[in-house]
Length: 373
Image (tube, rainbow, N blue to C red):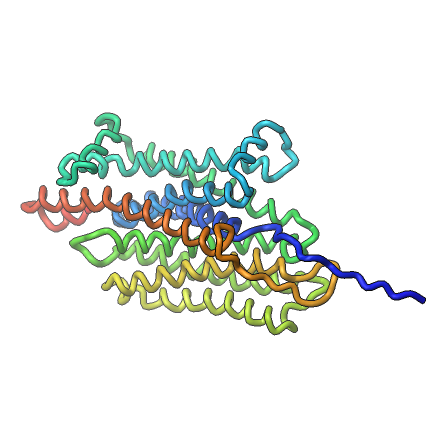
C-alpha cells in the first residue's frame, strides 16, 4: 500500500483588497442615492446641507469606486475587453454596462442639485473657486419635480449596481459562504452604514451657523441604521450557517471574525440612540461616522477576504497577510486619500453658498434663513 501526500501550493487570492474597496465605495454611492431621494422627497423637512452631503457621497463614490475596480482587474487596460467581447451571460459584463451609467447619473444628479451652490462661487474670494462658477453652464433652473425624477432614475440605477455586484460573487459555487442569497443582501444592507458614515463625515466638514441637524435628518439616520443594522445581524447569522463542510461557530478564528461583525453593527445601533444629543457637537457626529464606516468595512473584509482563507479541498490553515504595497495597505490608503481629497474640495462648494446666503440675508427672518440653509 502506497501513501501519497498531496501538498497545495501557495495561491493568489481570487479577490484582492481592491474588491473590498470597490464594494465599499460603490455601495456607499448607491445607498446614498436612495437616501438622497428620500431626503429630497421630504425637502421641506430635511436640511440642504444633509442632502448635499448625501449627493456628494453618491458622486464621489461613483468616481472612486470604478477606479478601485480597475485596480482589482490588475490592469486598467482590461476594462475594454468587456466592450470588445459581448458576453451577456457574465455578471461582470452586465456590470460593465450598469456601472458607467450609474456613475454618470450620480455625477449628473449631484451637479444639477448643487448648481445653485456652484453659482455662489462667483462671490468667493478664492480665484480658483471663482473660476469654477462657469460650471453652472447658464442660469437655467430645474423644477423640484424634475429633480426628484432625476434622483429616482439614479436610485433605480443604483439598485442595478447592488444587484450585479452581489450576483458576480454570489454566483461562485465553489464558496458556499458566497453562493447564497444572504451574501448580496448582507452587502446591500450594510452599504447604508457606509453611506450614512461618509455623509456625516462630509457634513462635519461643512462650516455652518447651525450646528444641529434637523429633526427629520436625525430621524432618517436613526431609522436607516436601526432597520439595516437589525437586518444585517439576522443576515449574518444566516450567512454564517450556510457552509456545509466548515462550522464557523466551532472555529476560534471565525468566532472572532463573527464577533467583530456583530459587535460593530450593534455598536452603531446603540450610538444612534442618543443621536439628538450627540448631534450638538461635531465630535459626536464624527464618532458616529467613524463607527459606521468601520462597521461597513469590517463586514466586507470578513465576508470577502477572510472567506478565502477557508480551504476548499484541503485541511489546515490558509493564512492571509495584508501586503504593504499597492495591492494592499498602500492601495487602501491611496483610495481613502483620494476620496478625502475630493470630499474636501467638493465641500467648499456647499460652504461657499452657506456663507454667502448668510451674509445676503442678515435682515431676513430666522424662518427664511433656516429655509435657505
